[in-house]
Image (cartoon, rainbow, N blue to C red; front, top):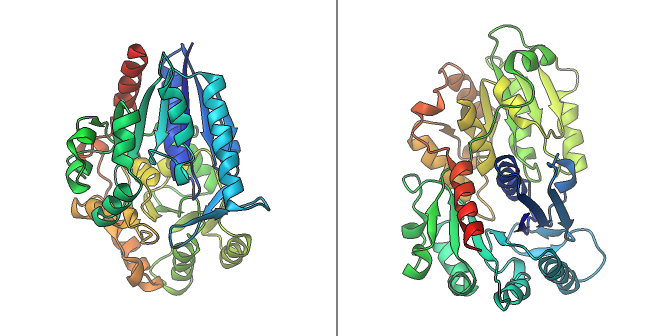
Length: 393
């Protein structure tokens, strides 16, 4: 068996772990000679179905504050002690699993350099595993990203430890090499794989619409703020719009997200309680069934949600997060400029503006993915790159 270790620090939302799981599941589907060990701090990893030949080591959770700094999420110990524990677990997993390939999600040295000891360990091995960095399409604004990468010596890390940089996006949409000023030592390792096409859900469109009680061609809106930790503003504005704006009476599925605070979720549930037009849920591990059943998404513009509505050929109204990073705002603006989504800036969001955007968008037919001009071949290209690295190892 070829062994792949995947590190994902994952401290906020579901984005990182869902993206990494999509890569892992696809690799398992394509190759019968691969086993994968995920090393992740995601508090939701256990909630996903994982294939045979995939297992995981759960790191103690960190939290990310609104200013971008980190803290301890669950344990009553110091941040430094938590980092030491996480680093020890990562290094032990690397040593005992003896991977042929290591995938690192987004941070070349991990959170607060917690990955550095493990990278130095494998670098000294006579049969060093191949190491690849996985980046989403957009990290943050160029100015902020360049400052962080320079401060944390990420390009030095790539030069010393990495064989390839796999970008899960398209150069024609956002050229990370030029936008972030990557030096030649990093740029020559970059491969643009494309966005990750998502397979249809486990439940077909008509069956899901029947389960939700949607009549015929009645428009169905899916409101999904991702992991939900800061999604109550978007969800609340939409529910208020349903109550106050009479022209907005669409059937709606509200997916609150598993990391939304209990009191915020209860408030949203109370707003939707008694409405025959709203089905409110906390979480599903089969999001594509709901995306496929819907006619329009209202979202914050996270990477995974964008891949989902593009894969299903749906349109979206996007109200992006702007703090602590501006990644979602940049992505939403790029898609809006291409006519693939409507951007409502969070500073301008209100029940009235949201109702107007949703009603306008539901009058436009969805364009099929083949006409959207977005490369959705990321899973296949990433698999080929990983297989090539495994063959070299």
